[in-house]
Length: 280
Image 1 (cartoon, rainbow, N blue to C red):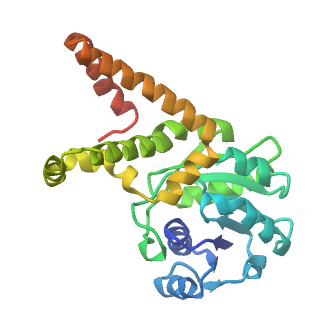
Image 2 (tube, rainbow, N blue to C red):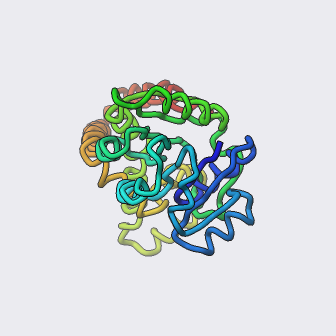
């Protein structure tokens, strides 16, 4: 197939590497000429340009821009596309994107590959980043069956596990396991930095090891991405943050009351629950 990728960062570049390895011809579009040159040199795309009209020949186009640029990008792009072209995105929020784009483009299907690294940019692109990872497709009642079938075939080639759900279900689910952790992790770092004794703060920074590294990683990530998660998934993120606050208050109360039995039971519950989300 001829596949277009608009946005040649980590995800877009990685998509290109894998799609080309499966025999697809890949067009890439980026805002910067230097990124286009790098993408060709790295083997992420066959052709690249800063002009959207390069994608006119594509059969499927992946929108891999930051969340806030997805809708305006599609609004510009569709002027260059024949009506049969399938358009999809990789944004981590789906409801506002699907709601805005579906009326504009019949062959649109929202998507979200649950994959990535702490790095960014075309230089961070890597092969097989999607293998074994969830890939969510958020088709609606008006999404053509042919578009769903084509996307399922492509996602299967990437080695991902396909999940189908509504945009609303997706956003509520990812608020728990993706967006809430970013905010909790950011709050952890901020709380640590509020230590008023400079010597103690420096000592804590020197002693920080694997536990702090694991729990602070996503809070130390891309600020723009974290802000976009909150902005475009505001209601679901607030819901999960409020529930988190209630659980935190519960822990504070147990410790203040020295209710060690209740605390141990709570920690036993969390110990047994974690494998339902992550299997180490």
